[in-house]
Image (cartoon, rainbow, N blue to C red):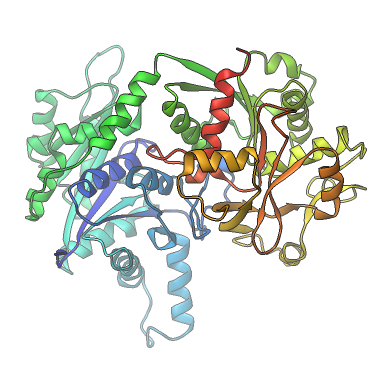
Length: 555
Protein backbone atom coordinates (compact mmCIF):
# COMPACT_ATOMS: atom_id res chain seq x y z
CA UNK A 1 0.00 0.00 0.00
CA UNK A 2 1.51 3.37 -0.98
CA UNK A 3 2.28 5.87 1.75
CA UNK A 4 -0.09 8.83 1.76
CA UNK A 5 2.34 11.70 2.26
CA UNK A 6 5.52 11.97 0.16
CA UNK A 7 8.89 12.74 1.69
CA UNK A 8 10.84 15.54 0.00
CA UNK A 9 14.60 15.18 0.41
CA UNK A 10 16.46 18.34 -0.64
CA UNK A 11 20.14 17.89 -1.49
CA UNK A 12 22.21 21.08 -1.41
CA UNK A 13 25.91 21.72 -1.86
CA UNK A 14 28.54 23.77 -0.12
CA UNK A 15 32.07 25.16 -0.53
CA UNK A 16 32.54 24.34 -4.23
CA UNK A 17 30.63 23.12 -7.27
CA UNK A 18 31.17 19.74 -8.90
CA UNK A 19 31.26 17.92 -5.56
CA UNK A 20 28.88 15.20 -6.62
CA UNK A 21 25.48 16.39 -5.39
CA UNK A 22 23.92 14.52 -8.30
CA UNK A 23 25.68 11.29 -7.39
CA UNK A 24 24.72 11.79 -3.75
CA UNK A 25 21.05 12.41 -4.62
CA UNK A 26 21.00 9.46 -7.04
CA UNK A 27 22.69 7.17 -4.50
CA UNK A 28 20.18 8.03 -1.78
CA UNK A 29 17.38 7.46 -4.31
CA UNK A 30 18.82 4.08 -5.31
CA UNK A 31 19.16 2.80 -1.74
CA UNK A 32 15.57 3.79 -0.97
CA UNK A 33 14.26 2.36 -4.26
CA UNK A 34 16.10 -0.87 -3.41
CA UNK A 35 13.86 -1.05 -0.32
CA UNK A 36 10.74 -1.03 -2.44
CA UNK A 37 9.81 2.64 -2.16
CA UNK A 38 8.58 4.55 -5.20
CA UNK A 39 11.27 7.17 -5.72
CA UNK A 40 11.78 10.00 -8.19
CA UNK A 41 14.32 12.78 -8.70
CA UNK A 42 14.11 16.47 -9.57
CA UNK A 43 16.94 18.79 -10.59
CA UNK A 44 16.63 22.54 -9.92
CA UNK A 45 19.00 24.59 -12.09
CA UNK A 46 19.89 28.22 -11.39
CA UNK A 47 20.32 29.52 -14.91
CA UNK A 48 17.74 31.52 -16.85
CA UNK A 49 17.92 29.23 -19.88
CA UNK A 50 14.69 27.33 -20.48
CA UNK A 51 16.71 24.13 -20.90
CA UNK A 52 20.32 23.08 -21.48
CA UNK A 53 20.05 22.76 -25.25
CA UNK A 54 21.68 26.03 -26.27
CA UNK A 55 24.43 26.03 -23.65
CA UNK A 56 27.96 25.51 -24.94
CA UNK A 57 29.12 22.13 -23.55
CA UNK A 58 32.35 23.75 -22.39
CA UNK A 59 30.26 26.09 -20.21
CA UNK A 60 28.13 23.53 -18.40
CA UNK A 61 29.05 20.07 -19.61
CA UNK A 62 27.24 17.73 -21.98
CA UNK A 63 23.47 18.34 -21.94
CA UNK A 64 21.66 15.10 -21.21
CA UNK A 65 18.99 14.13 -23.72
CA UNK A 66 15.86 12.57 -22.22
CA UNK A 67 13.46 10.15 -23.88
CA UNK A 68 10.83 12.87 -24.37
CA UNK A 69 13.31 15.25 -26.03
CA UNK A 70 14.15 17.35 -22.99
CA UNK A 71 17.67 18.76 -23.18
CA UNK A 72 18.62 18.76 -19.51
CA UNK A 73 21.51 18.92 -17.10
CA UNK A 74 23.77 15.87 -17.13
CA UNK A 75 22.69 15.02 -13.56
CA UNK A 76 19.47 13.77 -15.17
CA UNK A 77 21.63 11.11 -16.80
CA UNK A 78 23.03 10.21 -13.39
CA UNK A 79 19.50 9.69 -12.08
CA UNK A 80 18.63 7.46 -15.05
CA UNK A 81 21.76 5.36 -14.63
CA UNK A 82 21.30 4.82 -10.91
CA UNK A 83 17.52 4.31 -10.92
CA UNK A 84 17.58 2.39 -14.23
CA UNK A 85 14.53 4.18 -15.65
CA UNK A 86 13.66 7.20 -17.78
CA UNK A 87 13.68 10.68 -16.25
CA UNK A 88 11.51 13.20 -18.11
CA UNK A 89 10.70 16.88 -18.60
CA UNK A 90 8.77 17.25 -15.34
CA UNK A 91 11.88 16.18 -13.42
CA UNK A 92 13.90 19.16 -14.65
CA UNK A 93 13.40 22.74 -13.47
CA UNK A 94 15.32 25.86 -14.47
CA UNK A 95 14.88 29.34 -13.06
CA UNK A 96 14.22 30.44 -16.65
CA UNK A 97 11.19 28.12 -16.80
CA UNK A 98 9.92 29.45 -13.48
CA UNK A 99 10.25 33.14 -14.36
CA UNK A 100 8.76 32.56 -17.82
CA UNK A 101 5.69 30.89 -16.27
CA UNK A 102 5.23 33.49 -13.53
CA UNK A 103 5.50 36.40 -15.97
CA UNK A 104 3.12 34.69 -18.39
CA UNK A 105 0.59 34.19 -15.58
CA UNK A 106 0.91 37.83 -14.59
CA UNK A 107 0.30 38.96 -18.18
CA UNK A 108 -2.76 36.70 -18.34
CA UNK A 109 -4.14 38.25 -15.12
CA UNK A 110 -4.00 34.88 -13.35
CA UNK A 111 -2.84 36.54 -10.13
CA UNK A 112 -6.01 38.70 -10.07
CA UNK A 113 -4.23 42.00 -9.68
CA UNK A 114 -1.78 41.02 -6.95
CA UNK A 115 1.66 42.58 -6.92
CA UNK A 116 3.76 39.67 -8.17
CA UNK A 117 6.83 39.03 -6.06
CA UNK A 118 9.60 36.48 -5.66
CA UNK A 119 7.95 35.25 -2.47
CA UNK A 120 5.36 33.78 -2.63
CA UNK A 121 4.76 33.68 -6.40
CA UNK A 122 8.11 32.36 -7.64
CA UNK A 123 8.53 30.00 -4.69
CA UNK A 124 4.96 28.74 -5.10
CA UNK A 125 5.67 27.93 -8.75
CA UNK A 126 8.79 25.99 -7.72
CA UNK A 127 6.86 24.07 -5.05
CA UNK A 128 4.04 23.37 -7.51
CA UNK A 129 6.47 21.79 -9.97
CA UNK A 130 8.16 19.66 -7.33
CA UNK A 131 4.77 18.36 -6.18
CA UNK A 132 3.69 17.73 -9.77
CA UNK A 133 6.78 15.57 -10.29
CA UNK A 134 5.83 13.55 -7.21
CA UNK A 135 2.29 13.09 -8.52
CA UNK A 136 3.25 12.21 -12.10
CA UNK A 137 5.77 9.62 -10.93
CA UNK A 138 3.50 8.43 -8.07
CA UNK A 139 6.49 8.86 -5.79
CA UNK A 140 6.60 8.21 -2.08
CA UNK A 141 10.04 9.83 -1.84
CA UNK A 142 11.29 12.73 -3.98
CA UNK A 143 14.98 13.67 -4.18
CA UNK A 144 15.40 17.35 -5.13
CA UNK A 145 18.90 18.43 -6.08
CA UNK A 146 19.51 22.17 -5.72
CA UNK A 147 21.99 23.51 -8.26
CA UNK A 148 25.00 25.57 -7.25
CA UNK A 149 26.22 26.04 -3.70
CA UNK A 150 24.80 27.59 -0.54
CA UNK A 151 25.42 31.32 -0.42
CA UNK A 152 24.88 32.06 -4.12
CA UNK A 153 22.18 34.62 -4.87
CA UNK A 154 20.98 32.65 -7.95
CA UNK A 155 19.55 29.73 -5.95
CA UNK A 156 18.13 31.48 -2.88
CA UNK A 157 14.53 30.99 -4.06
CA UNK A 158 15.01 27.22 -4.29
CA UNK A 159 16.21 27.19 -0.68
CA UNK A 160 13.29 29.41 0.30
CA UNK A 161 10.95 26.92 -1.38
CA UNK A 162 12.33 24.07 0.70
CA UNK A 163 11.96 26.13 3.88
CA UNK A 164 8.37 27.12 3.02
CA UNK A 165 7.42 23.52 2.21
CA UNK A 166 8.57 22.42 5.64
CA UNK A 167 7.52 25.34 7.85
CA UNK A 168 4.44 26.74 6.10
CA UNK A 169 3.00 23.75 4.22
CA UNK A 170 4.04 21.18 6.85
CA UNK A 171 5.42 18.75 4.28
CA UNK A 172 7.80 15.97 5.27
CA UNK A 173 11.09 17.63 4.34
CA UNK A 174 14.62 16.33 4.91
CA UNK A 175 17.65 18.48 4.07
CA UNK A 176 20.94 16.81 3.11
CA UNK A 177 23.92 19.14 2.74
CA UNK A 178 26.87 17.90 0.67
CA UNK A 179 30.04 19.77 1.58
CA UNK A 180 33.76 19.62 0.94
CA UNK A 181 36.38 18.91 3.59
CA UNK A 182 39.76 19.78 2.08
CA UNK A 183 42.92 18.06 3.26
CA UNK A 184 45.78 20.56 2.70
CA UNK A 185 49.00 18.70 1.90
CA UNK A 186 51.03 20.69 4.42
CA UNK A 187 48.57 19.82 7.22
CA UNK A 188 47.56 16.26 6.38
CA UNK A 189 44.13 16.37 8.03
CA UNK A 190 40.61 17.16 6.76
CA UNK A 191 39.51 20.66 7.72
CA UNK A 192 35.92 21.28 8.83
CA UNK A 193 35.83 25.10 8.79
CA UNK A 194 34.62 25.49 5.16
CA UNK A 195 31.70 23.18 5.93
CA UNK A 196 30.91 25.06 9.13
CA UNK A 197 30.70 28.29 7.14
CA UNK A 198 28.58 26.65 4.45
CA UNK A 199 26.10 25.38 7.04
CA UNK A 200 25.93 28.88 8.52
CA UNK A 201 24.69 30.09 5.12
CA UNK A 202 21.89 27.52 5.36
CA UNK A 203 21.03 28.46 8.91
CA UNK A 204 20.92 32.15 7.96
CA UNK A 205 18.18 31.18 5.46
CA UNK A 206 16.22 29.41 8.19
CA UNK A 207 17.30 25.92 7.12
CA UNK A 208 18.84 23.42 9.51
CA UNK A 209 20.37 20.47 7.67
CA UNK A 210 19.39 17.05 8.94
CA UNK A 211 22.45 15.35 7.44
CA UNK A 212 25.88 16.47 6.27
CA UNK A 213 27.56 14.38 3.58
CA UNK A 214 31.32 14.95 3.76
CA UNK A 215 33.14 14.91 0.43
CA UNK A 216 36.90 14.91 0.31
CA UNK A 217 40.08 13.05 -0.50
CA UNK A 218 39.95 11.17 2.81
CA UNK A 219 37.38 9.67 5.14
CA UNK A 220 36.52 11.75 8.16
CA UNK A 221 37.20 10.38 11.63
CA UNK A 222 35.39 10.52 14.98
CA UNK A 223 36.97 13.86 15.89
CA UNK A 224 35.82 15.53 12.66
CA UNK A 225 32.32 14.14 13.15
CA UNK A 226 32.15 15.52 16.66
CA UNK A 227 33.31 18.97 15.56
CA UNK A 228 30.75 19.14 12.76
CA UNK A 229 28.05 17.97 15.18
CA UNK A 230 29.01 20.68 17.68
CA UNK A 231 29.35 23.60 15.27
CA UNK A 232 26.67 22.66 12.73
CA UNK A 233 23.95 21.50 15.14
CA UNK A 234 23.75 18.05 13.52
CA UNK A 235 23.75 14.69 15.29
CA UNK A 236 27.16 13.03 15.03
CA UNK A 237 25.76 9.88 13.41
CA UNK A 238 24.05 12.09 10.80
CA UNK A 239 27.47 13.14 9.50
CA UNK A 240 28.03 10.80 6.55
CA UNK A 241 31.36 9.83 4.98
CA UNK A 242 31.68 10.14 1.20
CA UNK A 243 35.40 10.09 0.32
CA UNK A 244 36.87 9.88 -3.18
CA UNK A 245 36.40 6.43 -4.71
CA UNK A 246 37.43 4.71 -7.94
CA UNK A 247 33.89 4.82 -9.32
CA UNK A 248 30.85 6.90 -8.41
CA UNK A 249 28.77 3.74 -8.62
CA UNK A 250 30.32 2.63 -5.31
CA UNK A 251 28.66 5.50 -3.40
CA UNK A 252 25.29 3.76 -2.77
CA UNK A 253 27.10 0.91 -1.02
CA UNK A 254 29.18 3.38 1.01
CA UNK A 255 25.92 4.96 2.17
CA UNK A 256 24.44 1.54 2.84
CA UNK A 257 27.38 0.58 5.06
CA UNK A 258 26.72 3.68 7.19
CA UNK A 259 22.96 2.94 7.40
CA UNK A 260 22.26 6.30 5.79
CA UNK A 261 18.93 5.25 4.20
CA UNK A 262 17.78 3.71 7.49
CA UNK A 263 18.55 6.97 9.31
CA UNK A 264 16.49 8.92 6.76
CA UNK A 265 13.54 6.54 7.18
CA UNK A 266 13.81 6.77 10.96
CA UNK A 267 13.77 10.56 10.78
CA UNK A 268 10.50 10.68 8.80
CA UNK A 269 9.02 7.67 10.64
CA UNK A 270 8.70 5.58 7.48
CA UNK A 271 8.78 1.79 7.80
CA UNK A 272 12.15 0.06 7.54
CA UNK A 273 12.49 -2.44 4.69
CA UNK A 274 15.29 -4.78 3.69
CA UNK A 275 17.16 -3.61 0.58
CA UNK A 276 17.90 -5.68 -2.50
CA UNK A 277 21.20 -4.43 -3.90
CA UNK A 278 22.50 -7.72 -5.32
CA UNK A 279 22.70 -6.42 -8.92
CA UNK A 280 24.54 -3.33 -7.75
CA UNK A 281 27.06 -5.34 -5.75
CA UNK A 282 27.69 -7.51 -8.81
CA UNK A 283 28.27 -4.34 -10.85
CA UNK A 284 30.89 -3.09 -8.38
CA UNK A 285 32.61 -6.47 -8.54
CA UNK A 286 32.73 -6.23 -12.35
CA UNK A 287 34.24 -2.77 -12.11
CA UNK A 288 36.84 -4.02 -9.63
CA UNK A 289 37.81 -6.96 -11.89
CA UNK A 290 38.02 -4.66 -14.93
CA UNK A 291 40.83 -2.63 -13.38
CA UNK A 292 43.27 -5.40 -14.32
CA UNK A 293 43.02 -4.88 -18.09
CA UNK A 294 42.85 -1.69 -20.15
CA UNK A 295 42.36 -0.69 -23.78
CA UNK A 296 42.62 2.80 -25.25
CA UNK A 297 39.97 4.42 -27.44
CA UNK A 298 40.50 7.73 -29.27
CA UNK A 299 37.77 10.36 -29.05
CA UNK A 300 38.31 12.87 -31.83
CA UNK A 301 36.38 16.00 -30.85
CA UNK A 302 36.74 19.68 -30.06
CA UNK A 303 35.07 20.37 -26.70
CA UNK A 304 37.99 19.48 -24.46
CA UNK A 305 39.49 22.73 -23.19
CA UNK A 306 38.28 25.08 -20.46
CA UNK A 307 41.00 27.69 -20.05
CA UNK A 308 44.24 25.80 -19.46
CA UNK A 309 42.45 22.65 -18.33
CA UNK A 310 40.97 19.57 -19.96
CA UNK A 311 37.22 19.11 -19.58
CA UNK A 312 35.70 15.62 -19.47
CA UNK A 313 32.14 16.80 -18.84
CA UNK A 314 31.63 17.80 -22.48
CA UNK A 315 31.43 14.10 -23.36
CA UNK A 316 30.11 12.76 -20.04
CA UNK A 317 27.44 10.44 -21.46
CA UNK A 318 29.87 9.01 -24.04
CA UNK A 319 32.53 8.25 -21.42
CA UNK A 320 29.91 6.59 -19.21
CA UNK A 321 28.68 4.44 -22.10
CA UNK A 322 32.24 3.30 -22.84
CA UNK A 323 32.74 2.40 -19.18
CA UNK A 324 29.49 0.43 -19.05
CA UNK A 325 30.41 -1.61 -22.12
CA UNK A 326 34.02 -2.11 -21.04
CA UNK A 327 33.03 -3.54 -17.66
CA UNK A 328 30.92 -6.20 -19.37
CA UNK A 329 34.11 -7.47 -21.03
CA UNK A 330 36.30 -7.08 -17.95
CA UNK A 331 38.01 -4.00 -19.41
CA UNK A 332 38.77 -0.49 -18.30
CA UNK A 333 38.42 1.96 -21.18
CA UNK A 334 41.05 4.67 -21.33
CA UNK A 335 39.96 7.64 -23.45
CA UNK A 336 42.60 9.41 -25.51
CA UNK A 337 41.25 12.87 -26.28
CA UNK A 338 42.31 14.13 -29.71
CA UNK A 339 41.54 17.74 -30.54
CA UNK A 340 40.62 17.61 -34.22
CA UNK A 341 42.02 21.12 -34.71
CA UNK A 342 45.51 19.66 -34.17
CA UNK A 343 45.03 17.43 -37.21
CA UNK A 344 43.85 20.43 -39.25
CA UNK A 345 46.92 22.35 -38.14
CA UNK A 346 49.24 19.74 -39.56
CA UNK A 347 49.90 17.26 -36.76
CA UNK A 348 50.18 13.69 -38.01
CA UNK A 349 46.91 11.79 -37.73
CA UNK A 350 48.94 8.58 -37.70
CA UNK A 351 50.97 9.72 -34.69
CA UNK A 352 47.97 11.11 -32.83
CA UNK A 353 46.05 7.84 -33.27
CA UNK A 354 48.98 5.47 -32.92
CA UNK A 355 48.20 2.43 -30.77
CA UNK A 356 44.50 3.03 -30.18
CA UNK A 357 42.10 0.10 -30.41
CA UNK A 358 39.17 2.13 -31.69
CA UNK A 359 38.14 5.60 -32.83
CA UNK A 360 35.00 7.61 -32.00
CA UNK A 361 33.89 10.90 -33.53
CA UNK A 362 31.11 12.20 -31.26
CA UNK A 363 28.53 14.97 -31.32
CA UNK A 364 29.59 18.39 -32.59
CA UNK A 365 28.39 21.60 -34.17
CA UNK A 366 29.76 23.95 -36.81
CA UNK A 367 32.84 23.93 -39.05
CA UNK A 368 35.65 24.28 -36.49
CA UNK A 369 37.78 21.13 -36.45
CA UNK A 370 35.65 19.33 -39.04
CA UNK A 371 38.40 18.63 -41.57
CA UNK A 372 40.49 17.09 -38.79
CA UNK A 373 37.61 14.79 -37.90
CA UNK A 374 37.19 13.78 -41.54
CA UNK A 375 40.89 12.87 -41.74
CA UNK A 376 40.53 10.74 -38.60
CA UNK A 377 37.50 8.97 -40.09
CA UNK A 378 39.42 8.23 -43.29
CA UNK A 379 42.30 6.86 -41.22
CA UNK A 380 39.91 4.55 -39.36
CA UNK A 381 38.24 3.37 -42.58
CA UNK A 382 41.43 2.77 -44.57
CA UNK A 383 43.32 1.12 -41.71
CA UNK A 384 40.32 -0.96 -40.61
CA UNK A 385 40.35 0.42 -37.06
CA UNK A 386 36.97 -0.07 -35.32
CA UNK A 387 35.01 3.15 -35.77
CA UNK A 388 31.86 4.49 -34.14
CA UNK A 389 30.42 7.78 -35.38
CA UNK A 390 27.81 9.46 -33.21
CA UNK A 391 25.50 12.04 -34.82
CA UNK A 392 28.05 14.44 -36.36
CA UNK A 393 30.39 11.44 -36.49
CA UNK A 394 27.91 9.67 -38.78
CA UNK A 395 27.36 12.73 -40.96
CA UNK A 396 31.08 13.32 -41.42
CA UNK A 397 31.62 9.62 -42.17
CA UNK A 398 29.15 10.11 -45.02
CA UNK A 399 31.10 13.19 -46.18
CA UNK A 400 34.40 11.28 -46.06
CA UNK A 401 32.93 8.36 -48.02
CA UNK A 402 31.42 10.71 -50.61
CA UNK A 403 34.74 12.47 -51.18
CA UNK A 404 37.10 9.52 -51.16
CA UNK A 405 35.00 6.59 -52.41
CA UNK A 406 32.27 8.18 -54.53
CA UNK A 407 34.71 10.77 -55.90
CA UNK A 408 32.40 13.72 -55.17
CA UNK A 409 35.10 16.36 -54.78
CA UNK A 410 34.10 19.02 -52.27
CA UNK A 411 31.19 17.02 -50.87
CA UNK A 412 30.18 18.35 -47.48
CA UNK A 413 27.42 19.00 -45.01
CA UNK A 414 25.57 22.22 -45.79
CA UNK A 415 26.04 23.16 -42.14
CA UNK A 416 29.72 23.77 -42.88
CA UNK A 417 29.55 24.67 -46.56
CA UNK A 418 26.15 26.02 -47.66
CA UNK A 419 27.46 26.34 -51.24
CA UNK A 420 28.84 22.81 -51.64
CA UNK A 421 28.06 21.19 -54.97
CA UNK A 422 27.37 17.89 -53.20
CA UNK A 423 25.39 18.45 -49.96
CA UNK A 424 25.38 14.83 -48.83
CA UNK A 425 24.15 16.08 -45.44
CA UNK A 426 21.56 18.86 -45.50
CA UNK A 427 18.62 20.56 -43.82
CA UNK A 428 15.18 19.08 -44.45
CA UNK A 429 12.35 21.57 -45.07
CA UNK A 430 11.03 21.65 -41.50
CA UNK A 431 14.46 22.54 -40.18
CA UNK A 432 14.99 25.18 -42.86
CA UNK A 433 11.85 26.93 -41.64
CA UNK A 434 13.07 26.85 -38.02
CA UNK A 435 16.47 28.24 -39.00
CA UNK A 436 14.89 31.02 -41.06
CA UNK A 437 12.88 32.03 -38.00
CA UNK A 438 16.00 31.80 -35.79
CA UNK A 439 14.04 29.28 -33.73
CA UNK A 440 17.02 27.44 -32.30
CA UNK A 441 15.77 26.25 -28.91
CA UNK A 442 13.97 22.92 -28.87
CA UNK A 443 13.48 22.77 -32.65
CA UNK A 444 15.89 20.00 -33.57
CA UNK A 445 14.85 16.40 -34.04
CA UNK A 446 14.78 15.55 -30.35
CA UNK A 447 14.01 12.59 -28.13
CA UNK A 448 12.93 9.06 -29.00
CA UNK A 449 12.27 8.19 -32.65
CA UNK A 450 11.62 4.68 -33.91
CA UNK A 451 14.21 3.20 -36.24
CA UNK A 452 13.87 0.24 -38.63
CA UNK A 453 16.98 -1.94 -38.45
CA UNK A 454 18.00 -3.71 -41.65
CA UNK A 455 18.44 -7.46 -41.32
CA UNK A 456 21.86 -9.11 -41.53
CA UNK A 457 23.74 -5.97 -40.52
CA UNK A 458 26.18 -5.30 -37.68
CA UNK A 459 23.48 -3.21 -36.00
CA UNK A 460 20.90 -5.97 -36.35
CA UNK A 461 23.32 -8.51 -34.85
CA UNK A 462 24.18 -6.12 -32.02
CA UNK A 463 20.61 -5.40 -30.97
CA UNK A 464 19.63 -9.05 -31.31
CA UNK A 465 22.58 -10.32 -29.28
CA UNK A 466 22.67 -7.73 -26.50
CA UNK A 467 19.35 -5.93 -26.36
CA UNK A 468 17.02 -8.78 -25.60
CA UNK A 469 13.78 -7.03 -26.62
CA UNK A 470 14.15 -5.89 -30.24
CA UNK A 471 10.74 -6.35 -31.82
CA UNK A 472 10.04 -6.47 -35.55
CA UNK A 473 13.53 -5.01 -36.09
CA UNK A 474 12.42 -1.65 -34.68
CA UNK A 475 14.24 0.21 -31.87
CA UNK A 476 13.55 3.55 -30.23
CA UNK A 477 16.62 5.77 -29.95
CA UNK A 478 17.25 9.35 -28.81
CA UNK A 479 18.05 12.14 -31.24
CA UNK A 480 19.52 15.62 -30.95
CA UNK A 481 20.35 17.07 -34.33
CA UNK A 482 19.09 19.29 -37.12
CA UNK A 483 20.92 18.17 -40.29
CA UNK A 484 20.12 14.88 -42.05
CA UNK A 485 21.69 12.46 -44.52
CA UNK A 486 20.59 13.57 -48.00
CA UNK A 487 18.55 10.72 -49.51
CA UNK A 488 19.14 12.14 -53.00
CA UNK A 489 22.60 10.52 -52.84
CA UNK A 490 21.50 7.30 -51.15
CA UNK A 491 21.67 5.02 -54.21
CA UNK A 492 25.18 6.25 -55.04
CA UNK A 493 26.38 5.39 -51.55
CA UNK A 494 24.77 1.95 -51.66
CA UNK A 495 26.24 1.12 -55.07
CA UNK A 496 29.72 1.74 -53.65
CA UNK A 497 29.15 -0.57 -50.71
CA UNK A 498 27.85 1.66 -47.91
CA UNK A 499 25.00 -0.05 -46.06
CA UNK A 500 21.99 1.91 -44.84
CA UNK A 501 21.45 -0.20 -41.74
CA UNK A 502 18.71 1.87 -40.15
CA UNK A 503 16.10 4.44 -41.13
CA UNK A 504 13.29 6.22 -39.31
CA UNK A 505 10.03 4.30 -39.51
CA UNK A 506 7.82 7.06 -40.88
CA UNK A 507 10.09 9.57 -42.59
CA UNK A 508 12.70 7.14 -44.00
CA UNK A 509 15.50 9.38 -42.74
CA UNK A 510 18.83 7.59 -42.57
CA UNK A 511 19.67 6.61 -38.99
CA UNK A 512 22.58 4.15 -39.31
CA UNK A 513 25.31 3.67 -41.89
CA UNK A 514 27.76 0.74 -41.95
CA UNK A 515 30.49 -0.86 -43.95
CA UNK A 516 30.07 -4.64 -44.42
CA UNK A 517 32.16 -6.86 -42.15
CA UNK A 518 33.83 -8.30 -45.25
CA UNK A 519 35.33 -4.84 -45.83
CA UNK A 520 35.83 -3.52 -42.29
CA UNK A 521 35.64 -5.23 -38.86
CA UNK A 522 33.42 -2.49 -37.38
CA UNK A 523 32.53 0.77 -39.10
CA UNK A 524 29.19 2.12 -37.85
CA UNK A 525 27.73 5.62 -37.72
CA UNK A 526 24.46 6.49 -35.98
CA UNK A 527 22.42 9.65 -36.44
CA UNK A 528 20.97 9.03 -33.00
CA UNK A 529 22.76 9.01 -29.66
CA UNK A 530 23.11 5.53 -28.17
CA UNK A 531 25.27 6.97 -25.36
CA UNK A 532 22.22 8.58 -23.74
CA UNK A 533 20.48 5.22 -23.31
CA UNK A 534 23.40 3.30 -21.86
CA UNK A 535 23.17 2.31 -18.20
CA UNK A 536 25.60 0.45 -15.96
CA UNK A 537 23.23 -2.50 -15.56
CA UNK A 538 22.30 -2.52 -19.27
CA UNK A 539 25.04 -1.16 -21.56
CA UNK A 540 23.95 -0.14 -25.04
CA UNK A 541 24.22 -2.92 -27.68
CA UNK A 542 26.16 -0.82 -30.18
CA UNK A 543 28.76 0.12 -27.58
CA UNK A 544 29.05 -3.53 -26.58
CA UNK A 545 29.66 -4.55 -30.19
CA UNK A 546 32.11 -1.69 -30.69
CA UNK A 547 34.16 -2.63 -27.61
CA UNK A 548 34.01 -6.30 -28.63
CA UNK A 549 35.59 -5.34 -31.96
CA UNK A 550 38.13 -3.03 -30.30
CA UNK A 551 39.40 -5.61 -27.82
CA UNK A 552 40.43 -7.96 -30.62
CA UNK A 553 41.76 -5.31 -33.03
CA UNK A 554 45.42 -5.84 -33.86
CA UNK A 555 45.64 -9.17 -32.04
